[in-house]
Image 1: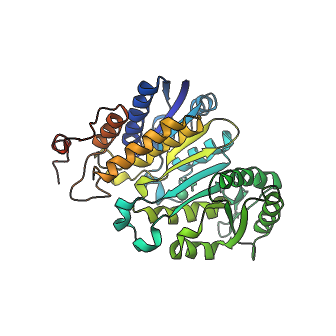
Image 2: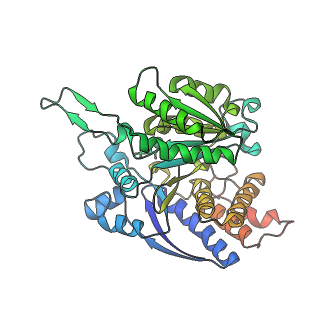
Image 3: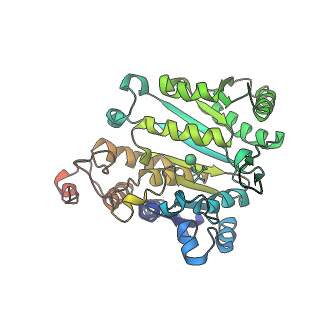
Length: 371
Ligand code: IPM
Ligand code: MN
């Protein structure tokens, strides 16, 4: 199989984690005879620095013509505390989502037994937690009309949804539930918001086509609480853009490290894959960030290409590193390995270069020396 992949490394730790993901993808290519060609493009603070534009036209053009996009992270502290900044890195990502019509953002929340102790929740409540969030990504309050009054004292952001926007993501969520434990939970605020009432009506209508899937509803404030109290109850969570943004960050900490979680944004054309963590500027260039979110995003990309065996091998390799304690600083602040070492280990596992009775000593040598 030949695939043209656009790589957007972005800001902060984006480049170093993405590099590990590419190592792994190359190892998969070699192992299974696939050809992955890469085109590097700019977006975010680095694009503003180099071109004045957070999303140069060339990036959109290349992304539209690609088979998939691998994205690192976006954001720089110099923009975060400046509400007057006219140009911001995030505008690049929002515009890319809109230009590619990436209407569904998919975030799986998985837990790993070897990391249970890192979760802020008790082990008993996180064992076997496995759910997936379908967040609408190109509508709602993110993209409604934004206004500030002439005197600068009043501002508004409109939240708008159409039936079609709700239907297309709802179908994806129900189909996913059919492949899982057959339950969809719609998270909304239908006791207050008109848009949420439309979501309920449309999703209820659609559910009649999926009689094998159970549908239930939760107000977003209650959902935020339930995710902490009893995360096991969820299978597929379906929700609008802003609620999805908030609850997916909340859910991400259940597994023990934000650095582990991948995501896929899919739509009408090429899909985009990215770790859900941000640009983590304090760690940039230090080779300490966790590359697993990016590597697992590659597994989601492979699944999207229909390469299920390949995706499974990447996930097996990731599990192998976690089980053997080959982990980055976020997971073990004392005995940690470098970002690049984890990337290498996973690619070597994929290439079958790690013997079953691995000589731990050899790998130990590549451990961090700055602890
Ligand atoms: C995310 C991020 C983005 C969002 C930001 C960077 C615009 O938080 O992908 O969840 O709010 O959608
Ligand atoms: Mn977010």
